[in-house]
Image 1 (cartoon, rainbow, N blue to C red):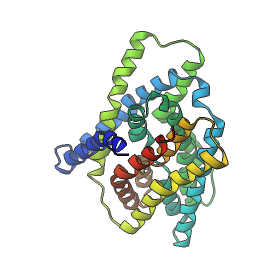
Image 2 (cartoon, rainbow, N blue to C red; image 1 turned 90 degrees about the vertical axis):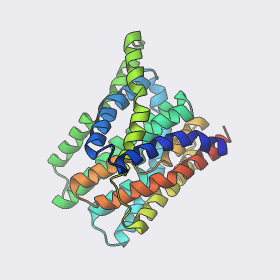
Image 3 (cartoon, helix red, strand yellow; image 1 turned 90 degrees about the horizontal axis):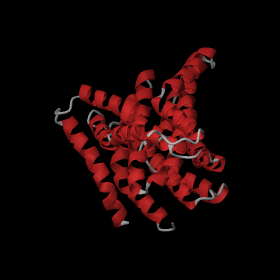
Length: 311
């Protein structure tokens, strides 16, 4: 357990460095925005394409794996939604809180960290988790927010969802990588090296950007942030573990380990972007991201340590 914790320390130290740079204003909010844009559109996209292009379709598309992850995630999503409704929150706010409860920082934190921590073979399972989050749950929150405001799900809403998916560089990178992989051809060596060099910037860049973006967030409404952190760091991995190990046993124990570990990641920054864009509880999401990221320094190490003992 201590060995796993010590391996995760450098990753969270990079986040802390970014946080310090942001808090001292050495790294301005504008600089953070541009760094995030570079990582999102270039470095991380190169990394995802390179992983997908060097994997077979069978390694990326496992329906039993996806079913197990969906079952665990939907279960916690419904729990968080039900609690929101019991607190008499509007549908839009309940949807945002449910998103916080299940959507982890897979792209910016999970993939860079797990590839170095668990090995390159973790890329396939992580891509499945990321694609599921982006395609299903990022679409669902837009439908729920706009549908609750308009009183119905219109063609315009579906057009917005579809356009958002098509314009998301992470989805595009994975799809293009899978398409190249299906040809059975290896990437031309200079192209492979170019992608490797550009993709290598994703890990330090993403972690630093996470920290710098956290510097502008506040921990208001701690009780709600604590509940959402509990959902994300405890309930979500527990539900996914139940699904992957008992209800829909995943054939590959390593893939199950990666899936459960991914479910233990803190709340993703893109939830805040959506909340801010639609004007639905952005401060609440901000607090959940800040608290869950701080607590995950310990919980992620514990969960990975427990899971890797059996592999």
